[in-house]
Image (cartoon, rainbow, N blue to C red):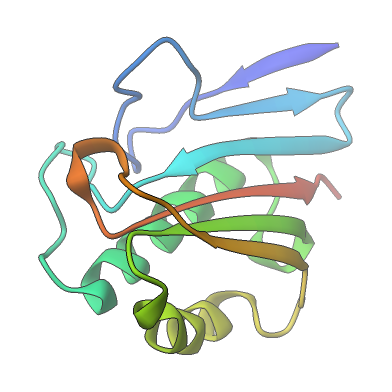
Length: 126
């Protein structure tokens, strides 16, 4: 069973995908979240503000699905520049430090809308 997750507390998708998908009522898959505010504007130009906003968007999608950041089991972090990893990691820990999900992090050539970070995640629905 599959159910689309949507919240107006995160930016609307900019392509043919959903903010999130609930699977069989036990998992929620959050699409990669870029650092846009719900109104579609960029949160800021620096890695700090962009990481905070991407994680706030992930949190909003999970909350709309009935999950929380404490329920996260896996994340993938895409960075424009791996030199931003330490800064991103410090902020990431504020949101996910207690749950310590499995994670992969990659430097990529380019991200949507030329942002500095994109984060996708999977969580359990309690």
